[in-house]
Image 1 (cartoon, rainbow, N blue to C red):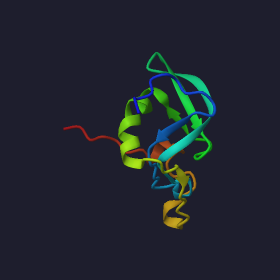
Image 2 (tube, rainbow, N blue to C red):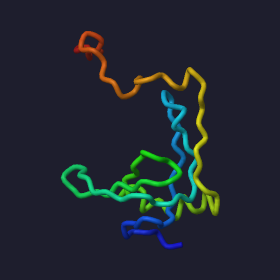
Image 3 (cartoon, rainbow, N blue to C red):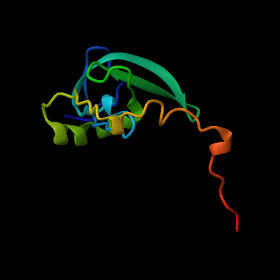
Length: 114
């Protein structure tokens, strides 16, 4: 399969990589083929980027410009296997808000100067 460079359309199959989260294990997903459900435009460093959403990982947008060049590599890794959720519901891997809430200013680490 030639690497897809065109932005996929709803219903297309693309490859996504495995995503494992330290503080949100409930959102873990194993990579493979996934069905596109939505494509939106965004900006990254002043350039248009396309966020691609897939049925197998609801709510997670993949940056197509980053993912497109990896399609051949992901195909070799996953073959015909479908991406699927594999949640880790262990409390130690599901700390609500741990990695997306800012620390209070008095808790921020300050870099020591020589």
